Image (cartoon, rainbow, N blue to C red; front, side):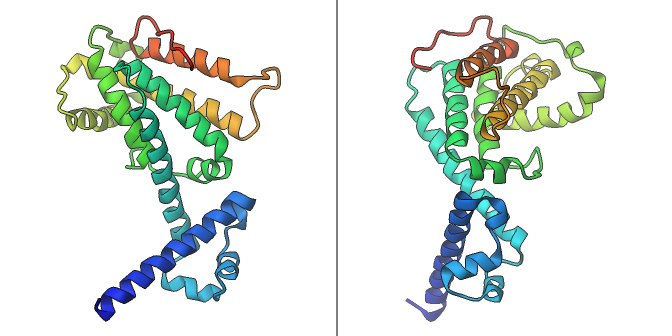
Length: 242
């Protein structure tokens, strides 16, 4: 092993230790506890020494977000791999439930990743999972057409940009749907579905769910039923063991 290779390996190990310490602080005490001083104290080094590895506190938090998204994506992919029905709508249910359960089990990590401003068309890991599901779902259900007229005119420009992103994601999987399959009406419903999914989960994670609902899970299932029908499935399947 050359001296340069040894230095690179030691640097990579130190970076991992810094991120592990940051994540431990996040889980234990929340985002505000993740300070360079606290991380340095955990590792037994000085705070200025951390700047040799990360340019700023924000740079460290961005890397921590990426690590969390990697872990979440791995968890969701494992759940998807275990879903063997072959039905796209069942896969959607599986990943949505897995996302909710992951978020409830990791509230501080969820808060850091999903309560931080991000580029909505950026290539974050969960966004990629969602596109891999939404693309085949739309492309496989060509019989159901939502008219572009359903979409408020003020949203057309934004949805056209997302339409291009989604078309690219579908094409990556060897699917070339006809133009009507990815019309703006369907894109509109996909975006609405994500908003509803995220909103429900965020309310639960942040303890803001309506007080009258003692068990949010049946409401979550009902929301998924409606989402599937809105996207184009005429009848939501009765899935055992939701």
